Length: 104
Image 1: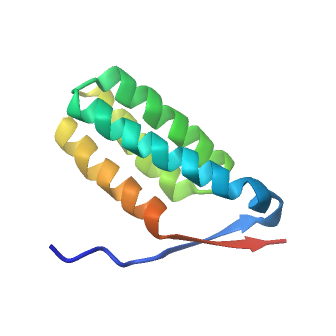
Image 2: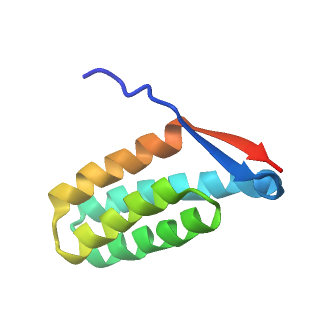
Image 3: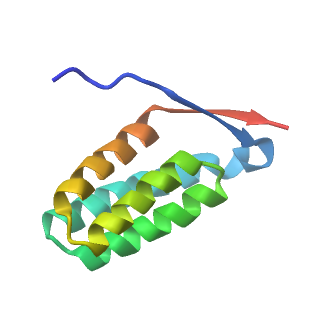
């Protein structure tokens, strides 16, 4: 398998710069927790975590991450674990390769 090397470059308001590293750490932990929920086929916990990521990502000006988290929410609601796997993989790659440019 060829590693995914695409970088996601996002402009974010500079006021968020001091707290952004902590935010990203939390989101990455949520991705890990979602993987655990997915492995356990716990769609309620998966939905809850994805919902948290969706709201946080939107608040921190990451609409693509929010959209991916929404896809995980929908997959969890429908017990579509195959779709959840794909979306969760995408969210993990997105967060791992994210490059933030603080503006303003």
